[in-house]
Picture: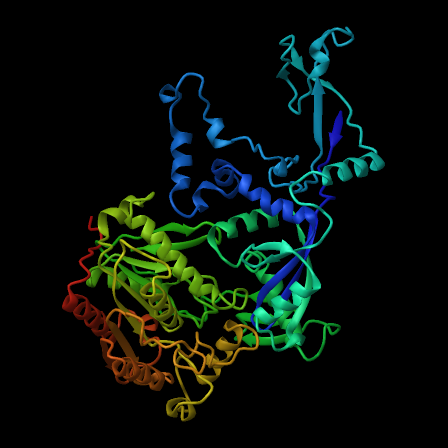
Amino acid sequence: MATAAASNTSVLSMKLLIDTKAQRVLFAEASKDVVDFLFSLLALPVGTAVKLLGKDSMVGCVGNLYISIEKLDDMYVQAGASKDALLSPTVLSPAASNSSVLRLPAPSTEQNKSFFRCGYNYNNYNSSCRSYVTDTSGTKCPSCSNQMTTECYYVEGDPAQKAQNAAAEGAKGFVQGIVTYTVMDDLTVSPMSSISSITLLNTFAVKDLGALKEKTVQLGYTEGLAILRASLQSKTVLSDPFSSLITLTSLRASTMSGDNMAPHVVEDFAGVIQLFSDGTVVRGDDSAFLAVPGAVQDLPGVQWKDVVYDATHNLTVRLPVLVYFHGGGYCIGAPDQPPFHNFCLRAAGELPAVVLSVQYRLAPEHRLPAAIDDGAAFFTWLRGQAAGAGADTWLAESADFARTFISGLSAGANLAHHVTVRVASGRPDVDPVRVVGYVLIDAFFGGVERTAAEANTPASVPSLTVEMADQFWRMALPVGATRDHPVANPFGPESPSLEPVALPPALVVVSGGDVLRDRLMDYVARLKGMGKEVELAEFEGEHHGFSVLQPWSTASGELIQVLKQFKTKRRRLSQIANYK
């Protein structure tokens, strides 16, 4: 029996220059082979890209074309035409000529492969049976139609010959190998020189050279797919696939104890999240921390289901148009946890509305602005739904996309603010979706300077404390950032002005017992000072997160009525839940 194990010995590498404070890749030093791989992406047929990345993960509608061809019965295909010509097209560019379509070694496997030949008349020198081999015993021989069951033996290639062949292959490709190349985070490629490197650092306005770290990364098939995917979806193509490495490098750079000490816990949130000095995150079950009396309570006439809006990160939206982001300090929480799901069910039934409860990536594994990027990506998906691109039937039948509200609780309200700003600024363009209002419930804002409510908190606070908020920000913000970072403090010293942004009408819900109440009152006052349309709803005696911690309480019912009035006043949301 012949056996052969696939090897991954020719993995490429490139050197990343990481800004540990900004947590991004400035640029990479790349060899000829890496640049050949990047340029070969231009030679990939669209069908090949869809096949490599997965038809369900494509941005836009190309994936639907791929699915349509897959489902098309052969009776509708022209004689002589082949579906494979579109589904698995040939890569013709010599720059992409390699055993792997990505010019990268295929993923390794430990499993041995068996090979078989035809034994019939095999000793006849003129027999064409000897020209065929298969990895499936019993396959019909193309020459004599007998079964191919005779085991044959694989001969490992001579290392010297392999090296010679690799050198010959290296002479191919697209660019010359006489220099090293600079690859920017947005995939701009140019020949590298010491002068160009200095110019680049000046371009990035790097003031602290000590914050720059070099890291060499391997570029195998998996990383190649990630770069291909990011190149179609992002302008930070090098930072996205290596985000975990960037976070780990930044953590190490900010740790005073040095790299030689054993990893130790730098943040421990109630035993639910432990962040170690080497960047490792140990995450427990946070459902107990967010536990409320009772489980998910289904309501008569209200339906819900899960659909995938981002296959890259396997994120889902729960359908019970009110877009809702759950809370949890950007570090814990999920749409399917009873506190958030029950509130969404009640909102869907009593507003009534189609409620889209959106999952996003959590810190510290994915530090901000990852969650905000996910929120923007969701609206790109929603735009496709509204345009009829692979629209979910149930959603298409129930949703009036021209009357869409963005909402959230706590960190989800912070996220709702930033997503609203992006949408209002045309980043992304969501037409034909129209956002006509946004609702912030107990929004999770912060700042370096303490407010009166934060500085004079009572001895016992039933939900969010100042210490908890500080810890969440330390784990969620970019390493080294303060609570005046624009994500935490929309009116901080480095935050862009909201005055030129055409924000839709806002409803800000404030709990009287919330330690963050002063920040929310300031948010309302500043928006009014800019001439923005904003309404304030105060719930005296309630604490941060009451709407989900007690979703069936009288106060939560009053909040639903406030939301209903906000919706009705503008006559912007006429969605109804699906009634059986």
